[in-house]
Image (tube, rainbow, N blue to C red):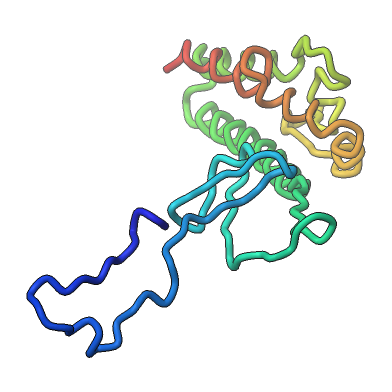
Length: 193
């Protein structure tokens, strides 16, 4: 960027700069991007972090296009990533359940802490988040509990329908700062840690 411009000068006399044919080939400039034809954002590097929330722009080359020919950026949601994360959530619970069951099988079957932890987690799974969107229960997006084993099961088809219906509502169901399942589970688990 402009702050990193190299300036050549001959401070010892003579014309060494000219003899070596040293001259400015390209003037140093900051990278600039115009958003919605309204906001110009500059950066000393070719990476811009603060133009669009949650998006890093890595500028490759200058564009001379303007108006109707300007470069276009399309941002899409990572639906597969969301489904993978929810699948990991289900797997993590099932691993915890398996660990608790193994501890019970090895002499801790009457341990009230294990039962309390499991009951607290299951209670949160079966409680309404109290959100204004269409999803307040995990079962509404395809996460249910097997009646016999207690393991969580994921209905991928129901999850895909839920993602298509309201992506943001699924985000809120898990990550709302006050009512999301992650917030509620963290609050419950802090009692045991």
